[in-house]
Image 1 (cartoon, each protein chain N blue to C red):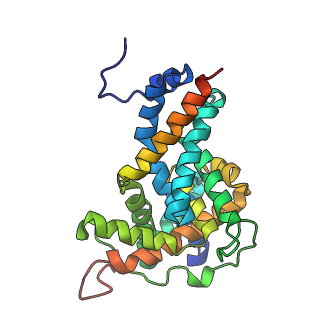
Image 2 (spheres, one colour):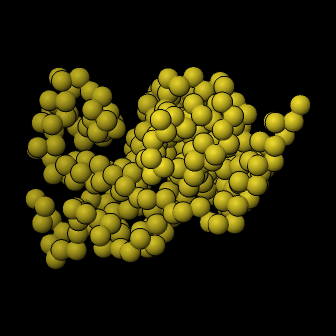
Length: 81
Length: 205
């Protein structure tokens, strides 16, 4: 069986489903027998999900205004011959 | 026929913007601006730099719209411009003590999985939106810059390992190694906030 260290080295690829079916089987065998690695896998997965789900706040109005002003200048410049 | 105004049709907006339609380009800016701003803030860890990065990204995107091939997603293309701008800001900061991208990394195997505790099923429900924002940003700001960029591009913005490597000028092996360590370090940091509050710490056994 894989050691915990070997398991953890493969964790990213396991979570991204980038392992071969054979490797997957070995990794799954490890977590079904090792509660610690199961918890690390589950919470690492949740770590990724919580960042993906977080909705970005609106652009602050002043930041948005300055951005559009800069763009307007650029666009006006482009139209000139 | 133009689609109704409330439907965001990216391909149409990109095509119209390429033909000089300023309003169409502004629509793209409004749709992606806040995500690009957040990415820039997370990489630079500085509000002023992030605003510069935001502007430069969209100014460059506008100037180089003709070179957007359309075979990648428009947002992915913007992310790559933004990350390059943000990394340039980091490199210019002479006082910055963060790890540079070409520095060798020490292995951190001994630090992996320090705290093992189950989380709530929906960990973010325990906190308000503002509190959650603070927790996530604080956790990510504690990572070395080179880990942070890899995590953001691969795990959050969904670039492939190869795209992440190309954008950051790293080898595929370096991206994989940093991604794993970034994920484990973040997991460790977030565990103190999101772990299930139970009497028995071994309740999961």
